[in-house]
Amino acid sequence: MKIDELLKKRRIRSHRASDEEIERLLELADRDIRMARLTMAEDWDWAFSIAYNAVLQSARAYMYSRGFRPAVEQGHKNTFAFMRAALGEEFASMMGYFDRMRKKRNQVLYDVAGLITEKEARAILKNAVEFVNIVKKKMG
Image (cartoon, rainbow, N blue to C red; front, side, top):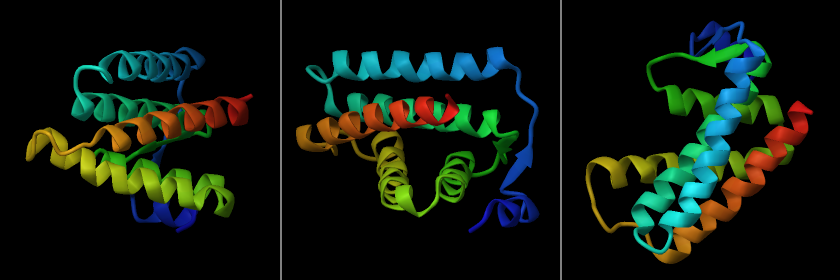
């Protein structure tokens, strides 16, 4: 789906963010990467969730920097739909991965404790670090 379609379907909205607002989101992403690393030894579910949050915060920073925000309803899903459209085919696989992890995170938070394996927690953390770095580079 393209950005204009997301706007038309009201999945995203125009938004004027301040530089400070965008910087705060990137700071949250950095904090979440640090905390996911620290939490890895204690709880894979939480490490997974925190790493996922780093991805979400950096994606929101990117959206804000481009003049958009997700609709309140299904905000995470709409954020990833925007990122897929904004970053294009080169990053489609990565965005598909994070969208699948969005669904898994929902299960971890609300339904099933102990769902995440060490391998999954380490994988999302590795991918989150890569994604946050990509976003920062693209925001330049």
